[in-house]
Length: 249
Ligand code: BTN
Image 1 (cartoon, rainbow, N blue to C red):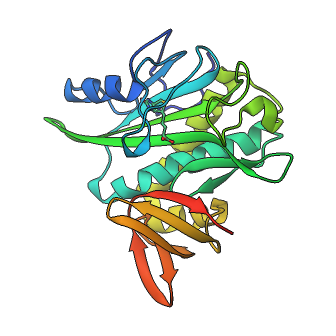
Image 2 (tube, protein in one colour):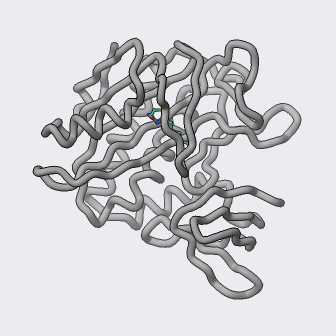
């Protein structure tokens, strides 16, 4: 396949595996190089956020993970950066005006005006003898077999994408990701957070957050320098570092 990004030039594409995230975490422990990319047509044990599974129909999604060995100070914003790369790639591909529900669900508007999930991202970190490694994996729905396997999902076909070529999309995402990682390395988190805010459809909305310590309802007012969501809960500022977001209004 065509590979534009220099950082992500080591791409391995396999027919089937358990989880590309699991495989690259193992590779990281074994000394695998930053910039390694693993892509698959099908996962038998795909992992989602918050301990959920990620199920796919063979050949119908773009499923891939990248291995990074980042500066520890940048780790918390990496999941946001990967989401931005997907949104930017989709906008360049054409036909899909995607945005990000905090932290990194890629949403598009369906014909009835409802928000549907096109892609999800899971970042996992591991300490290796070479230092900290982070694996960031994404699943992008390309073409469902018979409709969404879970409620609220949408694929590139229904979203009106100008192309559903997985290799083209992968090359675009890796190019955008390379760009944002270089920006992060050179200029720190400020430009990243500014760019994220402009792609985030959660800000300004009233949301319900399912966090590890319970449910929080408030207005999403900002993204802080760590990538956390800042809520206004009855006039009190509350910072949420992890959770599932539901847009209420
Ligand atoms: C989510 O819950 O929204 C995140 C889903 C992440 C799925 C991707 S598919 C490629 C990579 N390998 C995995 O096991 N999970 C991620």
